[in-house]
Length: 163
Image (cartoon, rainbow, N blue to C red; front, side, top):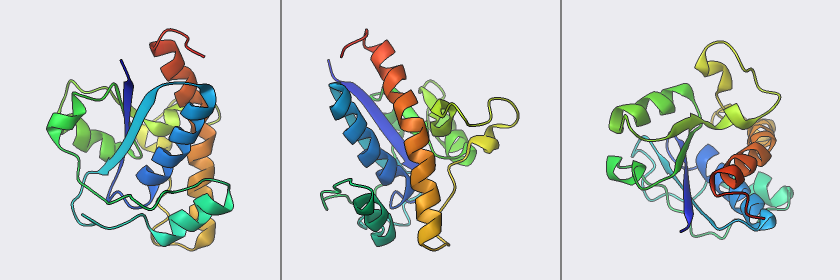
């Protein structure tokens, strides 16, 4: 059975699709059968493609966005069908837990070994690059990449140590 992971941000055009693409790459490299998708807690960007600045920074770092992404809002019914739901911020985590208190919602950056491991949950927020320039998208990608191997290790443990 395929393990299912969802990444979630606000509008589903920057952080969560960036994390989706990075995680797909890492799971494939690890030989793990994982279905990764992304969504947003808001419908404000519904139908829009990944932000061009997010796409540009991904391409610059060797990732290959396929151009098919369209932003969508998460539905409560989806949360129970995901084995792991990765929230980009504490606000996203709270919104997801309200939608489905039983969902396995975890802060994305909690898998970063260098992220704060004590204190308020908001200290694990992935920085929002939307209002900034290219450097903000670089920071966002760096935070996503820093946690990606931890997510892969967690999933590997969950599926019983597969490759």
